[in-house]
View 1 (cartoon, rainbow, N blue to C red):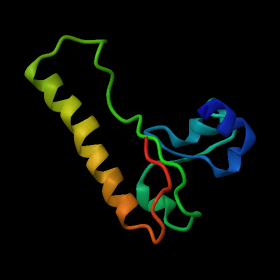
View 2: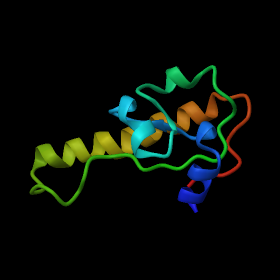
View 3: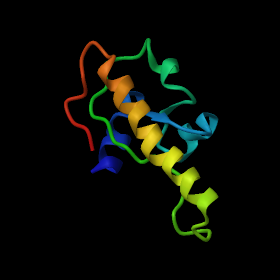
Length: 95
């Protein structure tokens, strides 16, 4: 479903990424942002999909790794939800 949306409306797809300059090439011409504040002047969020976080399978689960996973997944999801809540129109769908 996301591929169809991405290919049919690439100008509407924004990606919050650690590498925003690569997003267009990797995701059908979508726009990348490094910080949610960079999105402030864009159209309303609709829909919103959360694919945040460091990989869980590529390294042993040490205490430091668990903390990184928590920050990259839970804390970033909280930041995303806060950003969604600050928008004048919330997303119609959040995955």
